Length: 247
Image 1 (cartoon, helix red, strand yellow):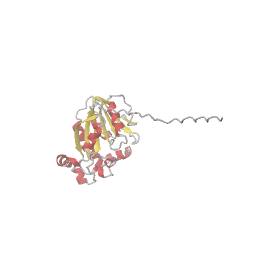
Image 2: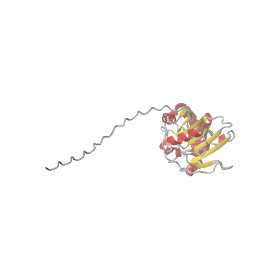
Image 3: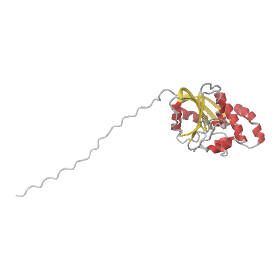
């Protein structure tokens, strides 16, 4: 079940949400440093991380699932958001160069259909970047933030999910080592905690991030063994023998 868009907006307007956005945005930028001329799609609730791509990208779109709701974005310009069925994206085949999936995979009910639809709209050399709560992190254990809802993933689980749906993982990253706290002292030390956690405690990050490309070859399917049909023999009743005539 997807988190409500209003709740997600309210979280990112808090001090903790603003710092979380800053840490994640920096990690996303480290993977996608140059998107000049690219067509970028944010799926789920990706608007807090899309503004950095607008000066470079040819086009930036933000699609929000119908069960989550939609909010206008950006607030200071023409809207680029749309309310969609995430399993039937209103886009032609091979039309998007980059897809950023945030607050999406952990809340999706039909993972296979969602990922196959993303595969359909990506170009041949397109890339998908998935941001998901880390199963071993503190953020996934507390439900007072959006990362505490839905299904968290380890990096191995996320990689397996992508490989099972025609994607090839290429790069990974981790982010958000700050605990979900309201302590001003800890919030001020977020950059130092990020550097320390990334170096010494990468397993306990708040999120795992995995970039993947399309597999352009069809998976080899094992041929089904032909089933032998057995004839069902139903004995036909014998006709009654005529009675012998008298005399």
